Length: 639
Image 1: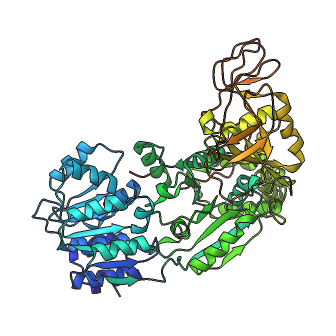
Image 2: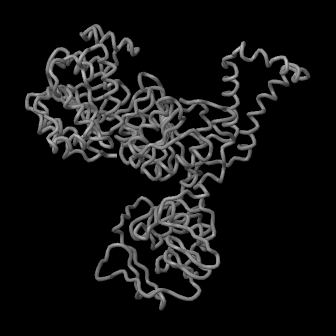
Image 3: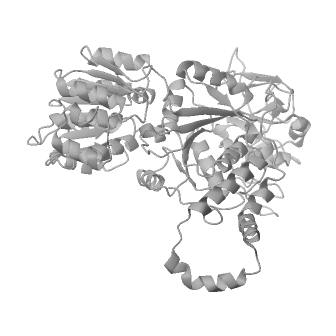
């Protein structure tokens, strides 16, 4: 079927022809043909990257009355990036329609400017729920004449906590409107929205519910947790032409991974909710223009990234639920192209892979992290391919050729090729010739005192001013161990957990004998008997029976929630030869967190994020070249 057969008006057909659209995708064909024929509510289920914006945007533009200068259609989207993308797409579809105005409404931008745009005669509003509720509270927008409401990425809006906002917004619209709900997955909360606010909706489904796209290859690597970053670099080097998104769970981890990649010479940047709108726009502009090879992002920030040539999605950590995995992997293989979704997991996470296989009905292939020889081979043949396809500017280079020919006249063709290739190949060979095997041999043992790593408890946490990185650096200092030997740091409010190699247990336990203090509290390290992944929020109780005349608390220490009358009490400041961390310290002691005075004059601040000189799990490796030299390649929060 063609777009002409769907009954679209000539101005819309001309615009989509300019955009290179030739034939509709399955979701476009089913949705547009239905909405062109009748006014009805619709629930449309399709994977990301299948053209859902055109599926609702083209029929929406068909019913807009350009002579009426008030909001007639409303599109709700979970993130500002998706909101902006929808606005841009609709403007492209409507470029031959006179009088159509689309306004994007989202947080992080000036609300007064958005109000002016709405009042100047916008017929279509693309909005994030939070900012639209602000406009409703200010009585700056009237939704009573809305004819069509589109809920785009409805599942993600509910995941982000917009349920109450959606109830407010939909309650302000007229009962005679049509609601078009688009989603990649259909959790129960989306079903609730459909049953509450929609009138006998037609269900249009392309593929099965929660099922991923067919043209995506799903691969996973099993490594130890401290080798996760090294595995990421190895994978990126193995795919020289990679143009992808690296997904992390938290904003802090996203920034940390991006910083490490940039420091190691990769073309990368971070996208997360702590960036300002102008920073996010700048990063996205670079990524869309192929000026970045890798975008490191959180799930929320990456929603709405509609870039058709993404080759790989890398899950640095698996998401919390299967729906988010579907959305992540859907960033690649868009517009009918193929792609690869890679997950870097530990042995204890392989069960989640089985769950994802069952829910998504896809097969996940376990692969070995490429070794040094594999990477060198891939880079070598990529270089040969680029040499074969390079554009030769005959006129510009002609004047230099006589000197070049004279300089190289003693070399045969075979020698010339070998030397030219070796100039670049040697960098990777030197870097990878002794590269370790990163594949997990049978699992990360995570129980205290057993296996290759041991889990520790420390009575310091976020209330002491620590975060994941600063606690790692603090522990590295007091134990005189490299920061890379401290991994899986889990920073809670009043205490934390971390892991180190089992052979270092005695070294870490020895800290207790050094009388190390932080903010007048003695630092205590203990082997934890709790397995990773067994819960342990900030309410977890952990008690130890130790006594000390200098610690200022009784025979029983309790961390976390008080139970049965036990309490946490820190009394007298220890004195003598102890080191003091946290307060003003005079003499030769070092101070972490506040001003330090003494003979050393040294000052080191903990409690605020900062970059460590050592990287967790990357073996202090640097990339054998930078993207600005050598194999140069120009690649391309809740509101």
